[in-house]
Length: 290
Image 1 (cartoon, one colour):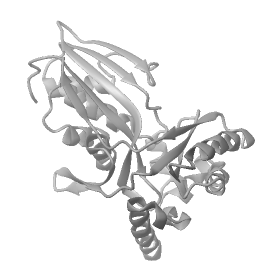
Image 2 (cartoon, rainbow, N blue to C red):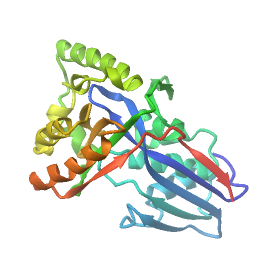
Image 3 (cartoon, rainbow, N blue to C red):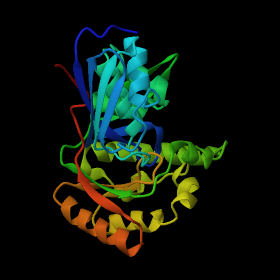
């Protein structure tokens, strides 16, 4: 808990986690943002703009819960402005928790957001920016930046349908065979090498046996869309977080063509949604006093 001596604004990026084999371990910050502005007030007031504006703007809102807990008061005027689609596998709740904690004066927004959201990799990407690995060490999260090629771009297919993380988690098996775990570890090594140098990135680097196949029944069009992204020029493709968004990792020079192909793929598969051309965010959390 910390005091709120002055008004603050915090801004941080969305994130794409897992990235194929890096289940609950890897995340990449992407250029969609949430901004939380908090000012001292006599009572709690909240407003939301952009993505998530349909959510209840009262004490049950995630930003309000986090900010009140951090600041130790309900006397807050909170404004949330978000570009991050909700329940689409782009780390919206982790990013919102990071921004709310930072705007409320927390010295450890990563720890606060991890405790609230339960996903240190998403929160770490929103705090640190870039490609990160994160895990829990004892009671708190530990995270580190990893090398990332500057000439990578991202094409993200964002369906209009939502897929809550809780539902996506329920689709996973409780146990996995030893050879499947080994399969993922090998692919993750290839993926990290390819993300550090796009010339080494191969399609097989995002193959996975821990979560993507188990979640396919929740989004049965996903295999065709993923293959279509790669056929259109993506270096590799995978689910973004728990889905249903899908991400094509591209050479920046060809990403525009892949995005156009992504729009056609969605239309052909009769999946309502949009194809976004994004870049990795390498800045992470930014906080300013107002």
